[in-house]
Image (cartoon, rainbow, N blue to C red; front, side, top):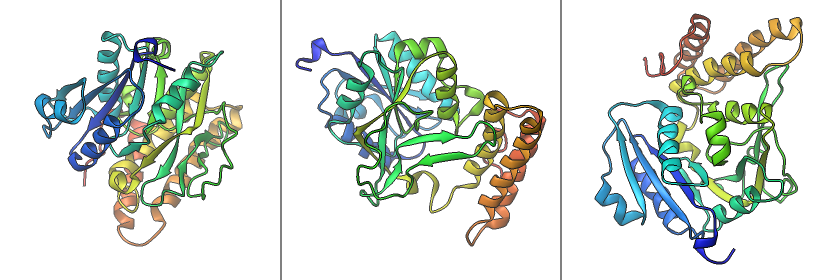
Length: 309
């Protein structure tokens, strides 16, 4: 890679939802990227914490958009994706507002994307911002029979044990590069998920369409998970994760009659067990999971009861 003119145009899509401090830190990290042919699209999702003039002072070649209400990660990211494709982006980098990429991270992702044959979706090595030596995840894996979902490498000390990985089942939407062809073919994230597990769904749909999913371990991104969910998952995220996990497995689950019957029970049990772990607010967490189970059975999609007390 030499000059920006000879490199694929990349658009970075970042959503802000009442997270100004985190988003400013993310934008400053983007301004330090060494990849030369990049633009940024920031979407104020149901809030007005930025403006186009201010954004221009933080990142050159950035574009500002705003939604009148919280449309969720999936719809907000798709809004940015459509604008990126209109502007001629060859690939779209979906980046969480609480993420901090290293300067060379995007370059490594593009190298992996442009390999021959290249994958359609590439994820980064996600490290914990508070403990940079520890992995947040290197990839995501899911047992399509039982529904058990894994953040591969989570909380492990990063000693290069996963640096050999290339093709994987899924990668985290925290820092996910998606080719233009995949964006157009898959139409972005499923907006009925609203937020949570839309990244796994996108990767599984890509694989079903014959498109590759890979991780580029040399692309390092630091994730402030505490800013996103607090010390434990919020009730909103528990509700959405529970409901969306069941929806995900209904769409992608494998196995015969036994697994089709057992899988929802297994996912429900895992969700309840997670909600009851640890001290404090157990009842609130359990109520959120039970609402998620009920709304899944009722066919509720989108925001649903995510922010109900």
